[in-house]
Image 1 (cartoon, rainbow, N blue to C red):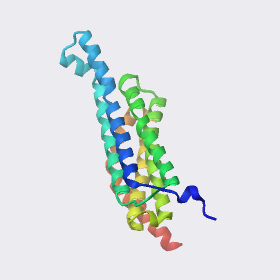
Image 2: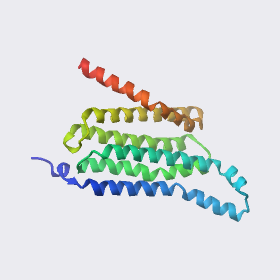
Image 3: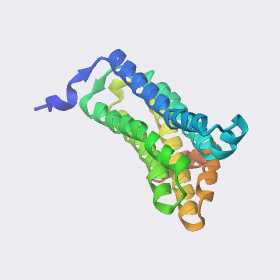
Image 4: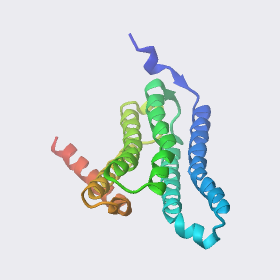
Length: 212
C-alpha cells in the first residue's frame, strides 16, 4: 500500500511564494545589526568615515551573506521552476533549506561584530554547507521521482554536480579557516571554481556509470 504521507502533494504556487517570503525576511534581517550600529554611531557623534572604518567587518559580512542568500535563492528558483508538485518529503527538504537561510543572519552578525575563532567559522560556513546539502537531497529525491518535475534527468544531474562542487569548496574553505585562521572567509572565493569542479564531478559520475 502506498504511503499517503509521501504521495500527498501541495500547490507549487503557494510553496514558491512562501519560500520567497522566507528568503526576503532573512535578507532583511541581515541589515538590522548595521541599523543598530548606525544608531550607536549617531549617539557617539561619529562621522560617516569613522563609522565606515569602525564597522568595515559588519559591512563586509552583510554584503557576503546578502550575496550568498541571493545566489541560493536564484538556484532554488531555477530548480523549482520546473517542479510540478510538492510532496511531503520534498517539503521537508525545503523546510531544512529554509531553516539554514533564516539562521544565516545569526552567524553573519557574529562574523561582523565578534573576533574570529574556529567555532565561529564552523557555524557560518557550516550553515552554508547545510544549505547546499539540503538542495542536493532535494535533487536526489527528484531524480528518484521524475514525475514531479518537467526537468530532464540530465539537467537535474548537472544541478546535483554543482551542489557537490559547492559543498566540497565550502568544506575546503572551512578547513583552511580552522587551520590558518580568518583566511577561511576569503577562501570562499574558491566558489569561483564551482563550474569547473562541477563539470569534473559530472564526468566522474558518467565514467562510473559507463564502468558499471
